Image (cartoon, rainbow, N blue to C red):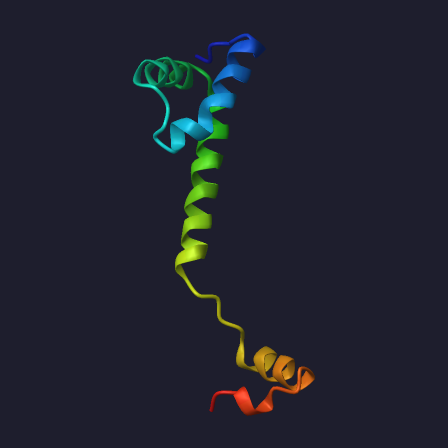
Length: 87
């Protein structure tokens, strides 16, 4: 059963989500927020999306992007950097 909350409650929870995900929200506020999330599907979806976005951004920063060799070759040729192409 989904419990409906007032939009003010959801707005307040949503305004605290970044601090919650970052572990910077006061413990008492965390408990209130978690209680709300346990009862509010809409806010839980927003939290899940935020957490997944943060994870993807962290993964992006960990991995060095690679250009396909064909794209790299064309780019270096256009920039006249042929001497820097790896063999």
